[in-house]
Amino acid sequence: MSKALLLVVADPSAMMEEEFNAWYDTEHLPERAVIPGFNTALRFVSLGDGPAYMAIYDLDDLAVLDSPAYQAVYGVNFSPWTRRVTSRVNPARLTGVQMFPGQAVTGLCARMVLVRLRDVSDADLAKTIAALDGFSSVHANCTQHRVFVCDQQTRQDGFVLFEFSDGHTDCVNGKVFGDMAEKIDLLAQYRPYRIN
Image (cartoon, rainbow, N blue to C red; front, side, top):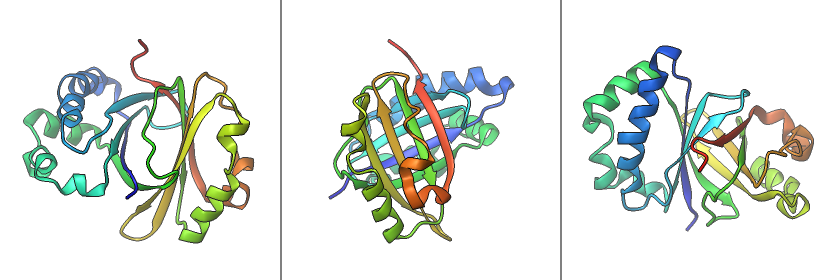
């Protein structure tokens, strides 16, 4: 069974940014990190070309989001602080199943590039995987790339995450996607939120 991913992006206002980060650091991320089936709980900051913050949660599978442990802290069971922050920030949430390679999780990286593909078919995603075949082996600083499919209510979208060991990410552009470049509606670069 393929791994899944919960990806959340947010653009807090300047007035909410300090509280948003405090909430993520002290309540939200730690709360999610201990839920069975959550393999990672990581935050990233935009380098200027996408939503300001991104959180990534690698999951055993999408069923984890229906588990009693997750439901105990989700939706109607949000904490008062979570309700306050999310009502003011309105984060956007994507869930996806890993099409390629299937079982990988987010590793340590200096940069991450998120590419979102809108309104794609299974055949489009197969073309995307084929277009990116060997990408990580050709670009030595790209430690891995993963392709995900997510079903929205009205369409099927996809996204690709590229991880890099350094800041040289200029190899990720529309050209590497071939025919699928026309489906790209977001190409954004991120760095880890905390650099240790």
